[in-house]
Each structure stands twice: as structure tokens, then as C-alpha cells.
Length: 547
Image (spheres, rainbow, N blue to C red):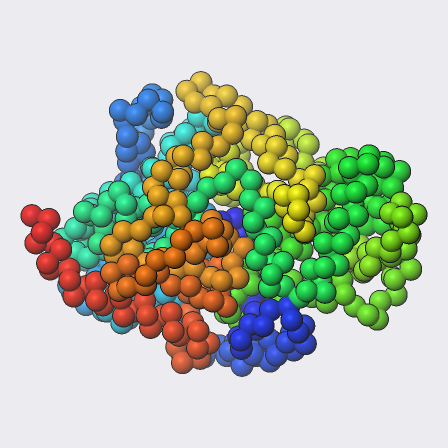
């Protein structure tokens, strides 16, 4: 789902997360070994093309209001036919909540490239509607921006219909003399996170068009609030760091619950965030290094990745800073003891110093810390700006209307890394500010989760749909390997595979020198090639049964 700008490489040996921060040195060594530029796949840049996509696939559904002015829009897609031989399969990657160019690497060194090379197939990326430059009603978007009305076709139903229609009607430049259309040719789709969910949804609705799919970390289960984001972190991150943050948050919540405004003001001053008026803005800001289900400005737990070409050590550096025994800030730890029965706030000084030196400087110089440009959230006018075409607004619209998954502190009785003052209503107010009622549609008071969960949620499974998840992924509870889900057999027809030490769609990345990938990544890639080849062997029989 929502991601920060960069990725963070994780230890490639065993991934004994958080139990020994000295592994940070090992990670740096591995990065230098695996970052050899000779390991980057040398191939021509994928060609960029456009396709006339249907704006509204469901013209008789009153949900979408009156017909669009333009019945089609230009949807961008990329093609890499480096390995293609006539008659080969088509591998289509759904770009999800970013541009097609943002996924370009996966046509060159990632899973799509590896599958295409193994099967003499063609690799493609389809840009998701409302991301990159693929906007329905481009004239209205240019003049009005992404207004509530202009976003009304931004739904899971429309997005998965895009995939099916594209596969049935696209003509690939340079291959016009060959019929590549589905279902006559095997199309296998791949997606990670939101796109992974849409791959799964596509296979439930268009299995007579799309032959197979790989849903990686597919967030198929919608929740209004998503406190589960932090559960995996609490279990796997460095435990001294986890316990320090939990203790500080617990004491902060005590001050909030007792309405001790004097103490809370002093706490904000310690972090250099006294300008923040809403205590929830403060609580969310100091949790930025850990992350959350929505947006954050730095690399966090979600961005941990085995791929050394894509990251930094931010999360572990945060934990190292918080728990440093050589700190010069320990005197701060007792500053608020008078408000908590004499109890010391262990590592408060370290934590506050990290926020002051690594988070606050991200705010532009001279800008009020309480503004929406920095760490405030209450400028309704800023939220209502429809001309944010970066993808953030499109994602927020779907979150407000369909899948929720908003930041939330843990329920009572469970330790929490995020203040319990953060509840779904905190994010919900931004929906009202961002998307005022339009002429033809309006955003619901709360997301209609059934529009997302109707495809099967945690019980979703169909033939030739592989479901691959990561055991340390913060989105785990929204995926089919959720601890709250149910186990199922892993078969070639319905692969069900958990990368035990893996994070958020880690199988999507790859290296030119496959033998240089960590063993556990080589294992899933080999398995993906195995089950895809088994599917392809059955394709003639499947196609004959359609007629």
C-alpha cells in the first residue's frame, strides 16, 4: 500500500531482526558485495506506449453517475520484449499506486524479467488509472484537478476491468502481425500490495480472460482502522527499541488521558514540536521513523528490502539512536518523572534528539511546523486542493471510499507503538476536507469496506492464483497469510507461499546475476517459475474448454 520514497535493505542472512543490531555492519558489508554495477541487468529501456482504455466499464451502474465526456482515456504501459519468442506468454505487472515508470526496474531485473526469460515471454507494466499520467477525463483533470466527481471512476472494480479489457484489445507496437490478445494467449498478471489485491480480485472476476496471477502481499482484507500495522514490528524489530518506544508512548497516553496539558506541552517542547496544536499530530509525527499505514516522510519498517540497490539503514539507525548507551541526553529521561509517579522515561532524550535531528529538518526552512506542509493536518483548504496529481490524492480517495486501513493505536490490553489517541476518526476528517460532495457523487461518511472485501478477503482463493506474502510484512494482517486467516495447502494450481523472513512483496525485486540473490529469494523465484511453467503446460486444455 502507501510507501515512502525509498527502500531499506535488510540483513540477507537469517534476518534475525532486532535481536542483534550489530548485524547492521553485516548489512553494510553485504550491500557493498551485492551492489556491483555489473549485476544490473543490461537491456534496452522498455518502450513506452499508450492504450485507449474505457473510462467507465459499468455504464449501467448508477454508482458512477452520468456518462463521462470522454468514453476513453490514454492509459500508459511499458513493454520489454527482450526475451520474447513468438507464441510466448505475456506477463503483465499492475503498477498499483505509482507510475509505470516507477516499476520499470521489475521489467529489467525483477520478477517479470525472470519469468519472461524463463519462458520466452514478454514483460509489460500497465499504469494504474489515476497514477502517473493515466487520467480519465484529462480535460477536466487539467481544468478542475482531481475533484470528487473526477475521481468517481477510481475504484477496484474499474481497475480490474482495465486489466481484462487491456489484455483483450491491446496491439503491441512491433508485434502487430501476431495475435497476442487474451484469452487466446496466456496472460499472467503480477502485482504487489494494492496491485496484489487487484490481481487477486481480477482472478475472481475475469478468470475466463486472464489465465493466471501472482498476488504478492496482496492486501485483500479491508479494515477501517489498521492497528495491526505495528504488530509485526513489535514482534520482529530490536526489542530494546520496541520496549523503549512502547514505554514512552504509554506514559504519553497517560498524560493525554488525564488531560495534563502542562506536562504535554513540556513533552512537545522536549521533542522540539511545541508548535503542534493537536496532540494527535504530535503523536503521529514522533512515530514517523516507525511508519504507519498512510504517509510518512522517511524510510521505515515497510521499506525494509533484501535488494541492496534500493535502500538505506534508516529504521535500524533510528533504533540504534533511541537505545544508545553512550548518549549525552539521558538527563532528559527524568524530566517528566514528576508527572508519572517518579517513573523514568527511559531513552526519552535519545528519542527526542532523533526527531529533532532527522525528522524536523524535513520541514522546509521558515515554514510553520503546524502547517500541512510540515507536521500539522488541520488546514482544510490544503487538503481540498484538487491539483495534487502525484498519486497521494488518488490513493486517499480509495482509502476514504473503499478500503480504509487508517492509522490507529493498539486496542486496550495490548502494548502500542502509536498513541491510542490516534483513531480512525483522525484520518476520516481529512476525507471530508479533501473530497467535498460533488454534483454527481460523494465520498461516504466511512469507507464502504464491502466494495473491497466482496471478492473474498482472507478467504480468497481460485485456480492459477498464487498468493505470496512476507512473514515480517506490516501488511500481513490484511493478506491471506494473516494470523487471523486460515491455513490452506500449497499446490502448483493454487500456490500459497510465505517468505518467512520476507517483507512487503520482496519477490518483486531481482538481480541480473540470480545466483547473487539471497537463498530465500532464489527459492521463491524458482518456485514461481516452476508453477508458472506448470500452468503454461495446461493452457491448451484450458483454452479448449472455453470454446
